[in-house]
Length: 230
Image (cartoon, rainbow, N blue to C red; front, top):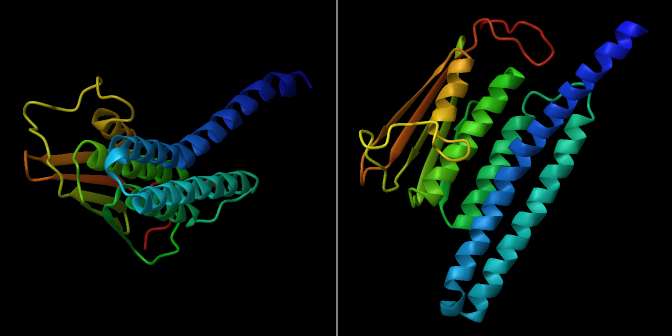
């Protein structure tokens, strides 16, 4: 019993951290998108017609409803002993659809039609990278078109994100720890922690392209089973 009592606090802490990460990853991007949309409406309010105002408010209301659904889905997923292999893909689709509608941008998401599972840490890394890169493209890059492509291969997974935004000078702004939030530096560090790499290509007036490659050859899925190649 003594061993159990010493182990329990650690287990509870790990579970609490896992739940916090799930809520942060799946809900916060939706809420951030809503906040940006509200700020945009506030800035343009005086120049909008009544019909435009109502339309924007309805879209924000729909986004809030989507965030509520995502929260419920997160709670449901957390209550399961095993997660479905593709649930995180649905989360990405929901996030991108919400961001596209709220900000009036076109986002194309392409992924392989496969039931192959990805390790939970890879899922989190890819989701966070997508959320941050798309958010940056919208709020900093003023992009109107964003392309997100996820490719699964036998021993690796590759994520490509490209936008038509204003871009930035790579020489004058290398990724650093001073990036606010989950910035470029942290995205690189996360990819590196999983044995992968992240490459960024951008120039003023030519948009930004991000490529993330993560190895899968010895990766394990969330049940601790080694993924088979092929």
